[in-house]
Length: 248
Image (tube, rainbow, N blue to C red):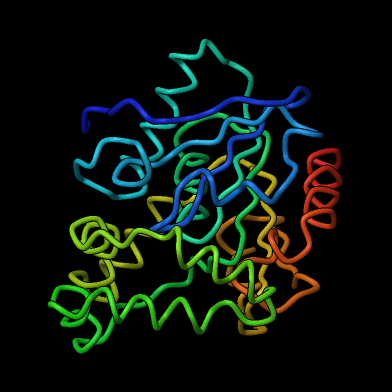
């Protein structure tokens, strides 16, 4: 098993335990606009390779999940958390639930039905133009998000090529069958309350696809079209988290 690394983090609020995991190229500050601590005892982390946490590989979801679990052990927290993950953080949250006890998982705008990336994308990610490629990609994902909020995210985002290539390695290097097995290994085998919230459209077949792998999983559309539905309507988002956690 890969050795864990200490994660930069903060703890705030009171109530049921929630662990908040950010997306790729982001850090724990990207949750600043969401009042999670008003309803939860919230542990926000910088995943390895992001923010103030060590920049050392590997960056696969199970390794990152192990870092998070070790942090909770270090903090002497043994309460099963509600694990909240945005974008790649949603994959890590899912991986966490496959290995450690949770109350539930909330995956924000991250499908698990992934396929290998085409060769031109692999070349862009591993080439000199990776920063421009990623900047253009994120610009297309802001959707209906307030332009001022989107501009702030763009300003704070940090694109590190080694981390990007490490995170996307399965998509870049694995064939379809290998990638299917990779995702299966991240999927909880025990009953797990699971909510998948999508600001950007997903195929109508995704709900059944996910339920076949995580029985009872709920897939729903956010009220605002954006990769950042939690920042587009933070009050709605926290209410949805509370309702899900209460029902779970």
